[in-house]
Length: 135
Ligand SMILES: CC[C@H](C(=O)O)C(=O)SCCNC(=O)CCNC(=O)[C@H](O)C(C)(C)COP(=O)(O)OP(=O)(O)OC[C@H]1O[C@@H](n2cnc3c(N)ncnc32)[C@H](O)[C@@H]1OP(=O)(O)O
Ligand SMILES: [Co+2]
Image (cartoon, rainbow, N blue to C red; front, side, top):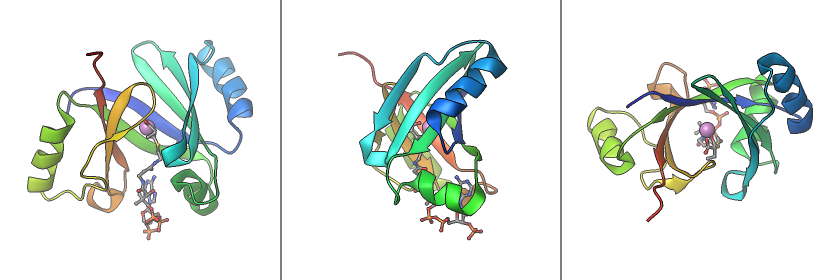
């Protein structure tokens, strides 16, 4: 696990939250991207070396929709960048963590991603992110 790649924040209204975080951070979001497979629409902000990901549900059975229904808006996950996500998944499995998708899946912002169940990480949903390198 290298640095924190992004903090994911579940929001009800992406446009309203974009405006709010633009005021908060003093910078506009640098992209919005839908990840249909996750049932989310995301927008990304860079604040110094840090990255914020806002997530809005695009369908009622989206993990974000379920989270919002249960807990409301707030920090949803912490993503860490990893050099080799397949190796990291195997290492974490061997350490006893529950990997929710053992095959990495395409995430937003040009990443391969995987998630660990929060029950095994002190209640924090952890995401692994590997940059997809242009071949
Ligand atoms: C990939 C695009 C983008 C990117 O960065 O590239 C993203 O980050 S997409 C983010 C959205 N996708 C995901 O979150 C995928 C992984 N999440 C899941 O598979 C589920 O959300 C899961 C398994 C974490 C929970 O789903 P479940 O159907 O089990 O929902 P429950 O409400 O029954 O939750 C069970 C249990 O876990 C607690 N929980 C749920 N979500 C979170 C969370 N984000 N952080 C901490 N804890 C969470 C929930 O409260 C339940 O605990 P309990 O004690 O029973 O209340
Ligand atoms: Co994320």
